[in-house]
Image (tube, rainbow, N blue to C red; front, top):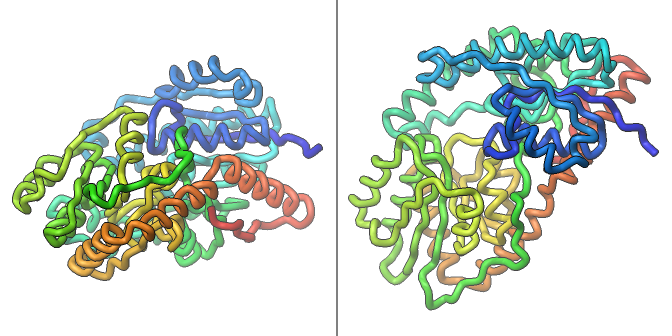
Length: 427
């Protein structure tokens, strides 16, 4: 029987009750615990939910040991501009995590260490300083937003993501900690193939590609079914902020011919909600659009399950949890052919559209909706393919892939010193 390794994970965000970064931290930690004994350093804010979940699931507690580091209060500037939080607060927290890691390593003698969250490439942590192999990932955020797409985000989005592009370029060239993280890592895990290409181009390192998200707790038994006599139901979900770019879909819907009946469920809320609702009213779409706001996760999944199509319009993203959720519910996806969507969506489960320009994308999106609205056999083929594709994103497969990376790293260390450069299969 293969020996279980002792692995130290750094996962600042690790909460079983929340989404986004917290969901990534918790899911990756529990997946790795299927194969190995893990010690997890997390933020103090995660203590209550983690301890409650371990109390309910003693099989996890047997192989997981959590240590929590208290967070300081955020400065008002860090609240206004999140990247400043990454540059100051998170680095301070990671220094405390490194001090704790040194003490734990003296007691446990870890086989390797793994930086999990934050996913952002600017915060590799300091675990690479320990005298054991360092694994980093999933890594995201290093890709720039194409300049040609910035006008579609409105003034706020154009300023924010334009400035982010400039800062990205500066930090890739001059930031010490990311450079050390990439140089010292025995293995890298990129959240998308696009991120892997950026890492290779910027730091001359090859990365394994494993997407950061996985299946939701509910998976449909059958693909979605539509009565062609009824309107085509579509769903869109995400935080209402410029990078999610819902107006692209709204403008595409305004292009649809009158003989194509449709309805749209919009999930989520955020700073752009009111502006987007004004766009919907100006285009005359309001009677067919339902704005749900934030719903409990199970309720949101039920809304998506009733849809015949799921549309995602993000101009800046990694893989996005909602795209995997839609596939798992047997709902085909229409998306831009970029970010992590390019890795996930295939011709068997959805339609990827080129996004060389905003207007061209809106026109292509309208044509894709019309095509599937008028061809139910094709839509059902994609719906069935969605369920099949979703199986490729189980946590069991991710855990196996991570285990293989660990074993290769240790074999490399035992056989011939050096860095591992074999990328694993994408998933």
